[in-house]
Image (cartoon, rainbow, N blue to C red; front, top):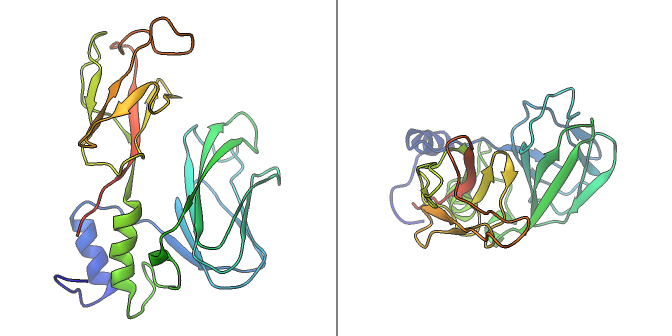
Length: 238
């Protein structure tokens, strides 16, 4: 890494917090056990180690009063498979070594809920290291920076800038996003990227697409009685 070198992980993390980056990651070694998540669990979980049998159980949706859109991202930096299941003990996904999965709640009417998982393949930088926030090591600072540059900083439930006046179709977001990560919700309903909206070329917003003659498509621009929120991964450059 070029540039200023921090004296410790603690100093590096404080520097990022001072720049309004929210660092929330739980790092655990895999074990032959069940990790039961709750509403208060950190949303980003990184597994390291080499022990088989790790299970992650998502929260009781009703008991934890989870809202649609609640999300957990699990990064498997171990050499074993991590199994994710819902509170009803249904297996949702098996995350292979070196891969990750973000799991989002789509229906909260039952204890098990309905979850949708999106898998990604991790870069080499997230493999062959056990160093992460709060874990000391010679390459922990480089790992931290590379990790943030690859996955970005999650931004959730941001209200974009743009008039809700039945005619405006262009909206902007506060930070530059990583390409392909912008998610738009209209009154809680997720819009389809490339169909209902297009990311801006500069990745600082999006444009709503209308198709009045197609069913299940947007027929008019958002109005003031509707609510638009966005989620995306904020681009980080060091």
